[in-house]
Structures are given as structure tokens and as C-alpha cells.
Amino acid sequence: MNSIKHLLYDYLITTGISENSAKYLNMLALLLALLLIIFVLDFVIRKLLVGLFGQFASRSKTNFDDYLVANKVPRNIAHIIPFLIALKFAPIVFTDFPDSDVVIEIILQVFAIILTLWIVRSLLNTLKDYFKTLPRLKDKPIDSYIQVFMIFAWVVGFLSAIAIITGIEFIKFITGMGAISAVVILVFKDTILGFVASIQVSINDMVHIGDWITFEKYGADGDVTEINLATVKVQNFDKTITTIPTYALISDSFKNWRGMNQSDGRRIKRALFIKQEGVKYLTDIDVEKLKDIQLITSYIETRQSDIKSYNSSNNINKNELINGRNLTNIGVFRKYIDSYLKSHSAINKDMMIMARQLAPTTQGIPMEIYAFSSDKRWENYEYIMSDIFDHLIAALPYFDLEVFELPSSSSFKQQLSN
Image (cartoon, rainbow, N blue to C red; front, side):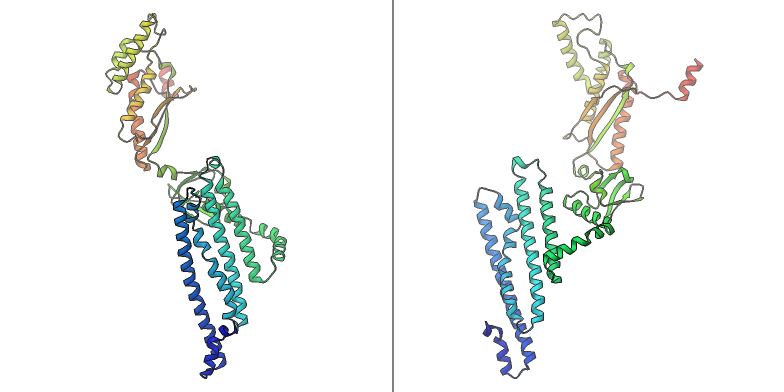
């Protein structure tokens, strides 16, 4: 070892260079040689290890090793041997510079912590991906468990690094931190909450810049323009700016419209309230009249044939419409809505299309439309929805139905005049 330490030093001294210059040149030469060896060794080991893992993963039946490769576990492990060599030979390089040797040793110890965290993180991500493929664990919050372990690892690593840099024993350092933690938490409460919230928001992929969110508690309804440690800025659609505490994103409920933007359609969910007094059975005359509406002609003919066959085979007395099976104007109207939506050019036919009758209310019978417009842009979406309801409201009289509305002052005046 001594011959290696002063390999170049002894030669330089013989050439007449000063002792101090010889020390620096010797250290520089050894450092460059060590860096070259580490770089080459790291490159070779990384290539070999990644290649071997890749070949093994492609041949094995389990997918666990595939996740190891995908999360760069072999790549991170490959750094261990070059690091150990650096740790072993660094004192030799700086043998004539004890002060620098101490600094280099501290840097290498901190790097050891960082390398350990890299390996732990890649292993935890591998376990997370693998556990998600297991049927018995699909409904378990695997992400949350992994995040807790990862946060704990980062905290321990950070405190260990601080203890190494300051030269304080880890146990004493933790004890000292505990003594001042209460004051730190009290003074930096909002900052700590924001920091934890920002980590969770990022890890859980809750909000991105550009997402449209609705946060009723804070009056926010617009696009996220900025996310920082303490606040989230939202530009509302009226161009006002709303500021939301970052920790509110994990403590309160809000709506993120990203899923809608990434989907194939935007939902239309609105109801017409129909007067109950207008609901009735359809007579043969009514049925023949409704056959002229092309969207439901085939439906009415099929239903009419089935109903007549049933009533005839069961000897139903049709002197009263209530007997046996019958068509109703609200039922035929519901079928008309369904057919109209399915023929509408702006409705996505690959997504849910439904016209349903909800429970009667004091305002009438809600007839709800549930469908998805192909165009998700707000202005066009509103136009499509208005166009649909314009048509349906105008179609109601053809079925002898009316929309419920509260009487106005003109209604009372008309009643008094009569």
C-alpha cells in the first residue's frame, strides 16, 4: 500500500519538484486513476448485472423479476461494488491530506445513505407493482403502505445524513431533535402541513397543473395554475383567482374533472319534471296518431302487436283501458327520448345512454336523461344539452304531456279574470 500511496511522489521528488507540489500531483494522479477505475467498473458491472437480470426475467415464469428490472433494482445494486472500492481507496488517495480525507469520508458516507435509499425505493416500488397483480391484494391500499415505509426511510436517511455531517452520534442527534420538535411543529405548523400535503398530492397524483377542479368550500371552479408548498392557485372561469391551502386537498373533498377530460365523453344528467295529471293510458286512436312519429313507429307497432296478442289470449275485457296490458303516454315518451338520444349525432353511442323515470315529487315526475356528449368543450357541451332539451320540451305536447312549473302572477290574474 505504501508503494501505491507514493508511487508518483517518489518519482517527482527525484526530478527536483518541491515536496508540496509532489504531494498535490501525486494526490491528483491517484484521484484520476481511482475515478477512472470506478467509472469503468461501474459501467461494466451495471451492464453485466442488468443483462443477466434481463435474461433471467425473460425466462422465468414469475413477473416479480420483471418488476425488479423495470424499477432499476439491478442498476442501483450495481453501484455498490464501485462505491466500496471508492470507500476503501479514498484514504490512500488523500494520505497526505488528512483534512480532505475527513471531508471525502463524510461525503462518501452521505452518498452511502443516498444509494441505500435508492435501492430501498426501487425495491418498494417493485413490491408495490407486484402486490397489485395479486388478486387477494387488489382491493388493499398498497400505495399507502409503500408510501408510509418510503417516508419513514427518507426521514431516517435525512436524519442520518445530518448526524454524519454534524459529527453527532445518531442517538444523541435524535434525542436533541425530539426536544425541539414541539417548538418546530408549533412555529412551522402550516409549512409542515403543506409539505406533507404536497408530497401526498404528488405521490397520489391527485392534482396536476392544468386540471379543472371544483372546490365548493373555497369557491373554486376552474383550472389549477400553480401548486406550491403552502397554496394551490385556481383561475376560475370568470377569470378570478382562488387560493386554496395545499393541505385542504387531502383534508377536504373536491372534484377533479381530469377523468372526464380524458374520457370519450362528457356526461349529460338532467331531468324534465312532467305534470302527473297528464299521465294516461293510450287509446287506439292515440296509438295510431303516435305512429306518425318516425323514431318510435317500429316500437309502437311491435308493442301494440304484443299487447293485443296478450290481451286476446287472456280474454281481457278492454271496455276499460285499465284492464290488461296497455301503452301509456309517458312510457312511449320515455322510449322516444331513448331513440332520439341514440340517433343524435353529438351523443357518444359507445357510452351509457338512458332515459329513466325517477320517483315522483311535489314538482311532478322527473324524467331524467343520462348520456354523454362526444364534444367535451364547455361551450359546445352546453349547446348540445340545450339543443336536446329544447327538442324534448317542444315534443311533450305530441304525447299530451306538460312540464311542471309553479304558477306565476299572470296565472293568478288569469284565474281571477275568469
